Image: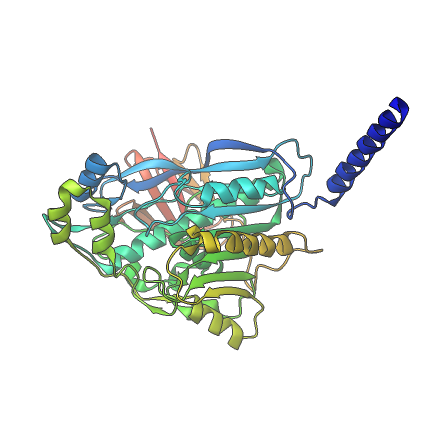
Length: 453
């Protein structure tokens, strides 16, 4: 009898071990959770980036009264040079050296949100992706827009809003270049870098793959009297392509459907048809901005909240319906998940949280596990700059060209010096005051440099 019990226990133990072995063998990278996750906070992916610094009184009120960080500013001329940061999530104990990477960008209408904001799915997605074998990054990008007005009446000009979007696209481009340039150190495949964006983050992600140069944006982005925003790829690592290899856009849009062209970068579009924040079809987003601000204020300020009027002149955006239509017309493969009568950010609703996450992860699994990386589309890879900074940035030379026009401007767009330069010649910059400048040489990508004597 005792032998029988012991024998049965042994069989059960062996069976359990067998089940565990089968389960372990069945676990598949990018599809199944199989790793614990290690998080590295505040990794710098670009340095000396100008952040707006003069908070508007409405922002100060929201921060002081309700702890709600909404970034409105009084002007664009007051800036503080700070780094751009990301939090990295990696599979602990993983020895694979060519892993797929995913950069996750939060929402917040370009005026709110954070890379570690647990109110959104950013942290959850990063943790879940790293547990499946991806290297995931939640990025900080510059937020904030110039706000006019006081008391109960405020307004944001569409040009200023467009400039906020442009600054953020510069940042997500820098994040992609950081991952690609440091692929060996991070243990990732530079040809398998994907983006997941929510709302504003989805807009940035789509703009990343579909824009390549400043002229892909409306000319008004460079506003008279405002600081020069510089090229799309002026900050962070240089010499590698800034475009991702695939995008998941959760309720996103583009500023112009014509920028899609024949780009075949894989995209997965998720959107609710009744979205009032980023419209499913075409229109100006954030029409409900006054209501959103009122909802942030406490009950003690209900009377004031009911009077607040916030007029946001956002640029017209083209939502997932339009993007889908363009891609269908061009016979470009892509995936969609459109939900009738669903509103903005419906992945927070119990009915849709799991379906959205499953579909997003399945899409990324297909990209990451493909036999060969999927092309990033028809575009030229950025060439190495022909500009060489010398002697602590006190002079520069070029490696090619003859009598090329050059200009040095400060961060407000004011010309500090100009002239012509040929290959092998050295241009002395030591007469410039200490500060940060942008060097433009005809035919070369702009270079941003600091000078300290």
